[in-house]
Image 1 (cartoon, rainbow, N blue to C red):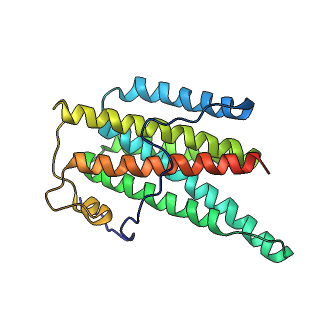
Image 2: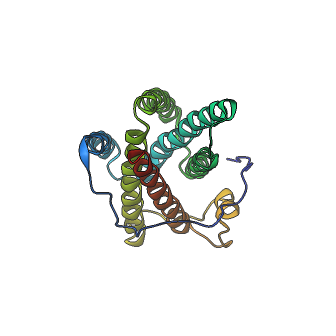
Length: 222
């Protein structure tokens, strides 16, 4: 399945913590975000179990939403600040936009690997619409809680990809050649396999985890 790669190759990663790092809940907002994340994880665990390819497609479908929503609302704030003459910083909206593009590449890669059925695509579209509306409402209500939720979701994504790697290493899951789209985007060698792709994506999720927790913390001390 050929997918046009219209996104520039992945730049250098910027992570603050190691693979196993998790944010310690502090206050009601954090606990709410953590509870929502755990509820979502429970549903995904029951539905997908060890179908990591399908799980990754669903995860990346949802993961592409927060960056897009966040960048849009922050860009609107940038515009208002420009009109009113208030000091403003475009970096947050730019960062979230890049995060959304990166998550889109994750989705494109796993779509090519898993080749989802029409029924799975319908489920993806439904989950995407529901999460987009819900997350947009949360972002309007509390940006801090929204970014903390994304941070927690990314923590679970890192954990999920670590489990995926373990299954590949123990030969419970196949390790086919990496698709060309992944080799070009992450600069992988020509003999790269799915394992190399999962490692690259996990590193991306670590960066998104750190970025969203950092933004949530910045918003909490304003």
